[in-house]
Length: 80
Image 1: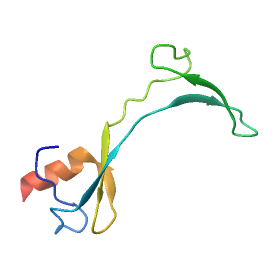
Image 2 (image 1 turned 90 degrees about the vertical axis):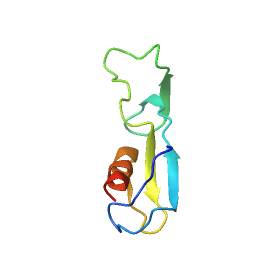
Image 3 (image 1 turned 60 degrees about the vertical axis):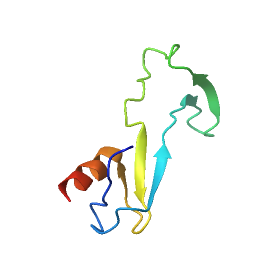
Image 4 (image 1 turned 45 degrees about the vertical axis):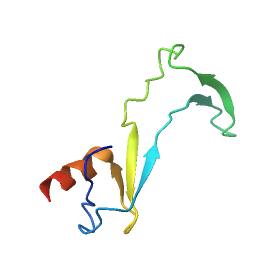
């Protein structure tokens, strides 16, 4: 996060952003009620449950509201 950002949507915001830390929670839910039946840790996932492999952070532009992966804002910041 020590690289310049620039919003790829509004193209002017380089200073106001919301950093969204993604903390995945692996669960098994009841299909009818939506209640959580079981929680999994990364060590005890069942064979049919894939571990989260998405980005650690998402970024939201503080001007236009666009939410994207951090690398999108970094790449656009490098081009400016």
